[in-house]
Structures are given as C-alpha cells and as structure tokens.
Image (cartoon, one colour):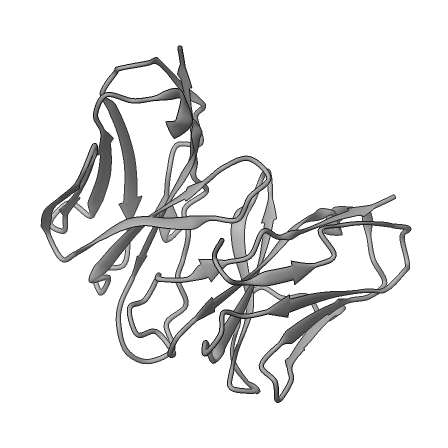
Length: 112
Length: 115
C-alpha cells in the first residue's frame, strides 16, 4: 500500500461547479496536511495546509482532514478555468528529518 | 516566483551520457530536496541536503548523485543515462529541516529527455 493515494483523474467539471478532491494516507503520525497545486509545465506551489483534524477555509478553497479515517479533502467552490491544474496532497509530520511524501496528484479540468 | 532557480529548463541527450542539473535555493534556505516526476510514478523523492550535508536518501539510483556546495546551491548528476530516466527533475528548498513538514518551495524543473 502506498503511503499517500490519490485518484489521478482527470476530473472534468463545468465552470462554477463545486469540486471535491480527495486523498487517503496510511501513516497515523502525520500531523500536517498540505495541498499543492501544479500548473502544466510548472513546479508545484503550496496552496494551503491544515494541522490535525478539522477544516480550514481560504477564499474559495476549503481543506478538510479526518484523521480517524485518514482521509483528506480539498473543496473548491465556484470553480474557474484558472483552477485547471494538478492538485497534490502532501501529508507530513514536524521534527526530525521526515521527507514530504506526495500523492500522484489529481488532474482537474474546469471548462468554460 | 518561488525564488528557487533551476537550470537548464530543457535538456535532450542520448543514452549512456551524463548530465548535471543545477539548483539555487531561495535566499536563506539551507535545505534542498531533489524530486523526480514522471507520468506513471508521480513526484518521487530522490535526496535531501541540509547546509552542505546529505540528510536523507529516497529512491535514488546509484547512477545518480548530488551535492550541495558552500554557497548552498546544489547539483544533481545523472550518469549512464537510460530511456527511463526521461522525466521532470524538481529541486525544492525549505528554511529548516522539516520545520513544517511538507512546506517546500519548488523550482520550475528541468525536463530531461533521453533518446
């Protein structure tokens, strides 16, 4: 079993739709849960993060973590064509020399 | 702009050859990570350096090596290249070792094509 699993998609939605991107992980020691966004031919960039369980909102984006089920979600409201990108989840833990582990990423296409 | 600079952006070479990829981290960042990204494997961790010293190794082949220099820039050397080494190679940096695990700043990558 991979440490972090994501459905690669692609997920195609119309503009304005609510998008749900999901990720599962196996290591219960993870405390931080990052979402990275990667546009075509670009490096990943940190979109947002949450610490432990719960929700975090940032504009049209909401990150949700359920540690009991080891399930991470990213919701995008009022999706825009500019949101078309690959979204990678990257859970991790602080301290020591832990290396961030990335999921394969989910490709999102928002069409006008 | 993440502040991480990678060169070259594109590289085409032949099997059996050797190439060097270069990375300059964000100003002040001591830690450099190298990742390989291919379509079927996603983003795979290769190696990490912290202030000039190797800190962690991932699935890095013996044909690959890296180093971090006193000015903190890093180089990834790939030798005896094979077709399967064709991929995007990313460098990332962070301020301190695992301050907030997962918070990395990526360069735009070096696209390597081996023919």
